[in-house]
Length: 404
Image (cartoon, rainbow, N blue to C red; front, side, top):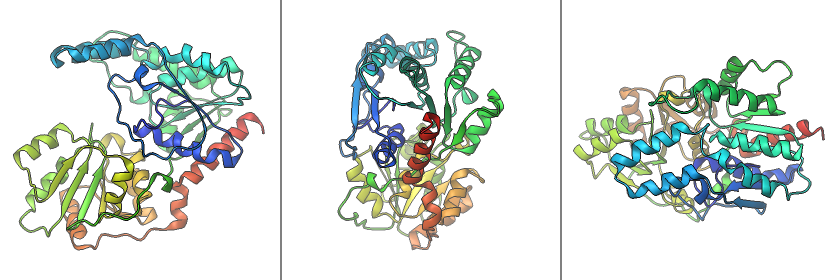
């Protein structure tokens, strides 16, 4: 199993391979984890969380000398006015990112492994697919590509006309897809878009295996008792996921809204930071950095609701955040476009409420403050989105491609 990150690295991409690795041994598969040493690939030191529950599986953290990462790290000593454009040039020159530079080191370690029956690799970053294809060819075993995000169908235009073209990267993706014995996608929209783009044909084994929530991630003794009704947001706001609409609604209704506090653990988007600078709302909003999972879990478990923000760019994606929230067993208050896949999941499973404009956002905040937010979880429906189901489908896919 190839993954760009593994605990104690706390990136969101860790969750899917970690949850699978916990369960695959009970389903007849022994995971061997290959992951780059963080110092080899990350330009900035990633967040670490030593409290993540890691299964007793074989893990190889493989170091490598990757020039683009070394250069980017050395730029940290320069002022941002210089380092930012140089980093952008470096990124634009890579095909598709720095991870193919890890291939030789990964092949060296993989060559010493015995009994490997297939190679499973999750992305993005999608340069990991290049590594996975090389290892599968070296070991002469089936390759399974696992898409947590779309790739070239969502590839943004470069700001500078340098480096590999979108067409050449699309050809790379097509080549990797052709080399795979199976491809899994976390949602049907992602699968449909790649089918339309690449026309894989009836023989292609492309399937949907949604993410899954895992109660093993949650470790705490007792929930934190908050002094007043509390809504918690855990994670980063970026791209089209902005906290600003929630902050604006809190500010506009401050005089009439009953006691209610929003606790943010993670990075705010620039627009939200500017809004909070102008309107601090200390009695309504607290903003802190990320904290380890074992500290965050009791805070979330004692909340009145968990805030989920879905931007227009992720309307058809089931954010990994929603699965982190499902395992806490607290109401989810979602905000984003009407018809979002996350909104459908929340309604279908009876785990909360959705807001899509200032009016429904205001109404939801008042309901959280008064303890009347809808929450009637349906256990049978929720199991479809569990890590157990995710692992069962993945193991079945492994059985199929290896003809067990």
